[in-house]
Image 1: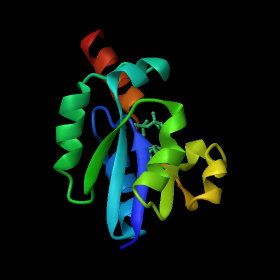
Image 2: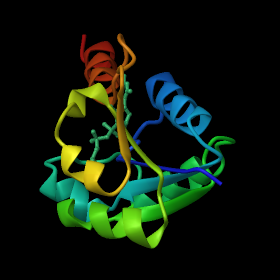
Image 3: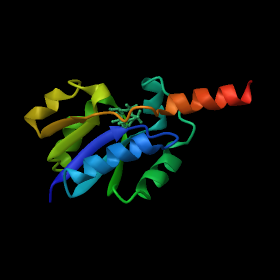
Image 4: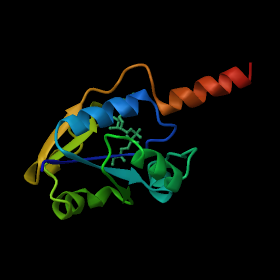
Length: 132
Ligand code: C2G
């Protein structure tokens, strides 16, 4: 069984996220998502609209996702890859090169980001709609 691992906040879930999760799953048989916890989001300077528990519930309902674990720090990836016997680590290419250290432990693949959608753009658009 080829196990795939990816990480993210996945707030205000959108089709760019789904494109990533689908392509990640297509690379193997089992997809684990390291979902950023609310405290870790603060470290990433991100404020989620949905809580970790609700983002986890949403992700667990997606057909491509087999397991969700919490991402609590930048330093857990090697341990996660080893502990979960991960074969392939996947991230969007906005992270190109940032996780190449994992190549000592598994395959590392950066997938093209989906153009034209992002959680921050959704927030901006909704703000301007509601504020003239
Ligand atoms: N993504 C994408 N296309 C978009 C938006 C996002 O492919 N239009 C991808 C990102 O590249 C990332 C994943 O979807 O691989 C999740 O995106 P975010 O929730 O923004 O994750 P991020 O804050 O980048 O967290 O340790 C890694 C971090 O936790 C990554």
